[in-house]
Image (cartoon, rainbow over all chains, first blue to last red; front, side, top):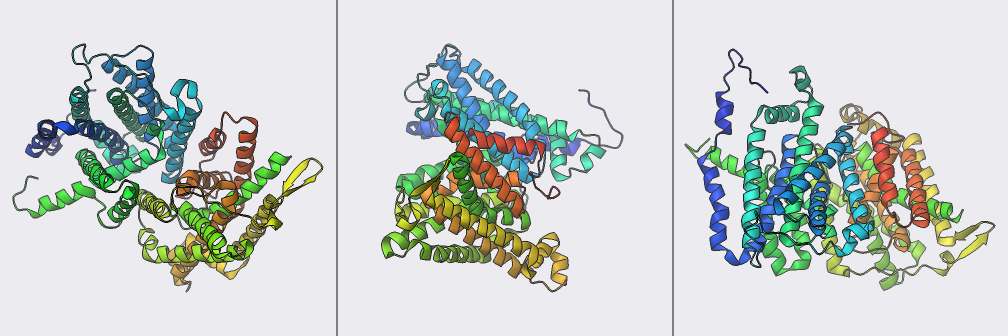
Length: 331
Length: 285
């Protein structure tokens, strides 16, 4: 694609938006610090990184393309099973597994996107939900391939890049997850600030106007949905590879619902919201369910209701409001 | 034939529970995923009345309906009404939150196990007609379901309240201008929907079972009914419930390997070809 220069149009502000800020550099020091400070919690930390990637994928679909999905776990599950089955059948190079899972999930996303694009919000909710439930039933019934409720076992991974084997302490798993998360985040950040990303934002804000500006709405949404599916697939594959197990739970409704909560908690449409939401949610989950595992769900529900009623913009919204109030804050 | 009969019975049960959802979703344009929680409430109230207080089953049903309707009114007044104008996403999140809370609450009071329910001897057992085994309880469900369907259709189409409801939904501002108390209409409608869900939940303990996971396990069925039938349409919900009930029972009977897959497929295929549902009005936004 070539970039045309338009008279009187100054892309400067857009470029400024795309530039990395100091706070962002600081943010990405967190996982490094966490590695040294919380050495015995590495498996929790890699769970956080994986969930963050998953939340990021939903942010691409919901926050940028504005497609409300109640069944995003479908792609997570496809990725998880794809990676698991590849490894169980002898293709156990981790990176090849990620790539395979991404391609399969993207293909599924591409096909289902046409169903999802039909109709209004409500129809989309139902179709995404229906697709996810169908996959769940499928995984449940095809016990010979997927192991059904018992889960898929016997996954052995080769060492990463032929050098680093997955150890008992989860060091490799953690570093692997964080690096994949960072790389994909960086790509997502490039994408949302590209003309493609900007046109998505335009579509979300005003669907009627975008065709008039020459943006093919449906093609853009298909692209975004496919991309989100690929990201979710990679997240699922990461989970499989680091835990060496696939439970049918990867396709469950509550995973999709929890993910929506995470994203809304963090704030949609900012990428960082997905990451921060995950950190807050997973930490709260870890602490609260440690105190009282059975009633964790009650607080989760309460949180959801309160967020919707009072804090609609999530943590990122709060941070932004705070930033505006502080004089001389970084814009 | 027995399969068809059982399918009709479970379809009508489905209709009782999901018609309330069809009304909130279609007429009031509110995505209430917590609808199953009202049904669950009805189920638990019924079980408690029967097992702990010895109330007869038939006498318990009106109490159950009133209790869930009351819960509906309280929640509508305190919480739901704040979200009428909100986006669908907000409504979804909010009602998922309610579902999670209701599951935990049910866990707290009743534990995770299935709740037993002893039907009165009058309603249990079955008799044989040529070609059909008729379960008495199933027959009872069919009678109740058909009665309520007819009554509802009459109410929406033939009474003053029905006309006010349709007016309030089509154009709340004009309805208000004509002196209709729109808020009151919505509260009553919501109460009616949750009351029916409660009744359905109580009637369904026998067939669907009752445990804290009820709202999540069956919400999909209710949504499918609404999606297939077209929302806000009593006749549509009725036909859709019957289709789903029969497909589900027949699917599980003849090809058990496939399980619930059949009805999900029915839903997705319907939505592909008729996004507004089989009997939907114009695609309501």
